[in-house]
Structure formats: structure tokens, C-alpha cells
Figure 1 (tube, rainbow, N blue to C red):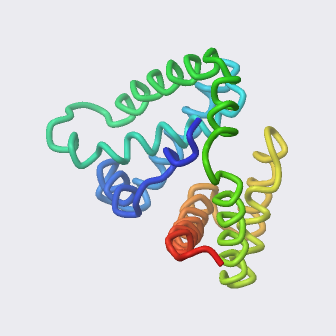
Figure 2: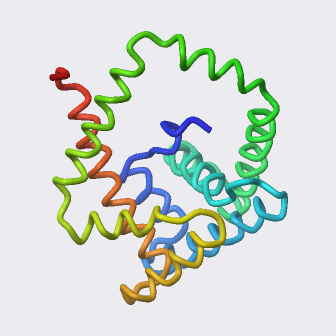
Length: 191
């Protein structure tokens, strides 16, 4: 899956929450409930990374909320499930495509090593610009994979005294700041 597709604006996110419910607490609870069900949906279908596919689903919906909020009728959760079916279909198509074609493109891209190195330098610079507690939280959040990731995130939320939805919102804010810093750095000339 294209990692650049896993981005959306804070405005989209808050618009999504307000579409779910006008009360912030209830909106966060609905968001969390829908998210948990989507993770289960993808896990039951033996997807390799149910959380990533869930994120993709949530992002696609968040990007469309401004277009559909006034015309969509019914429970918003059902819209998420329809989008999830499309994400699942796209994921199966992508997995069946020829991966050697992607490798050829990566190898033949001019200056790709330089760009990648510049990206890593920008990422390191921006990580160091974050306050230490945010850097540690970000590192802890993305440290594990599969079931260990789920368990570690649950434990991290408990340590911070917040629920998993509040932890995701906190990480969304940190990663948004980090993404903006990296994008700004990438626009500057390479040394």
C-alpha cells in the first residue's frame, strides 16, 4: 500500500468526528467502536496488517465526509463498512500484482538513493526537534508488529491513563507535526 495514501488533514479528522456525533465524547466512542470492528473485519479475512487497512479505511472516509455528510442517510458506521470492502478488494488486487515490476521502478528511479537519503536525514532532524516525551511516545507506539503491537499499544494507553482512542488522537497530532516538518525539510535544497 502506498504510504502517502495514509495521510489526511486534522480538519478531515475533526470533520469525521463531528459527523459521527456532535458530542466529542460520544464521537470518540463511536470512532473507537467502528475502528475495533474494522480491525476484526480485516483480521477475519486473514489480512497481513488489519490495522493498516483499518487506517486506510478511516482515512478514505475522513477525506469524503465533507462531500457526503449532508446527503448520506443512515448510520455512518455502515458507510465505513462499505469503504472497508473496497479497501479489502484493493488490497487483494495489489497483493496479486507483480511485485518485481515495483522493484524495477524503484531501481530505475533517477536519484532515488539521494532522495531517500535526504528523506532519512530530514526524518532524523525532525525527530530530534520533537520534545523528548513525544519522541519516546512515537517510538514506543510504532515499535512492535502484529499481536505484540496491539498488546504494547494497550499497555502504553494504560500507562498514560487514557483509552486507546485518545492515544491514537495524541499520536495523530504528533505524526502530523512530524510529517509537516519532514515535508518542509524535503523542499529545502539538499546539502
